[in-house]
Length: 64
Image 1 (cartoon, one colour):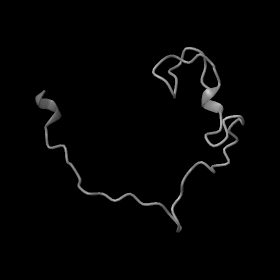
Image 2 (cartoon, helix red, strand yellow):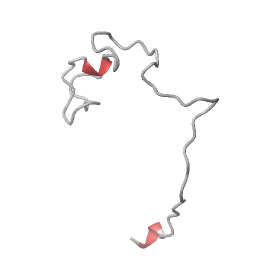
Image 3 (cartoon, helix red, strand yellow):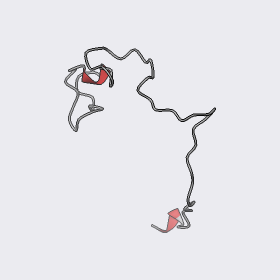
Image 4 (tube, one colour):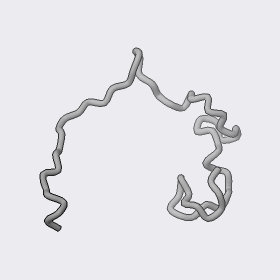
């Protein structure tokens, strides 16, 4: 859980120490224990992200 006053990870506000960020996504009555059952993993040994394009920054940073 975040500390009081830090940015909330779920809402656009400061942390109120409500504890909602520590609840399980699959069973909201349970505190998260990092079981990772909520993470959808593909079949196989690894996950992949297809890259369509690579954008290069060609601007000279000294010309601003």
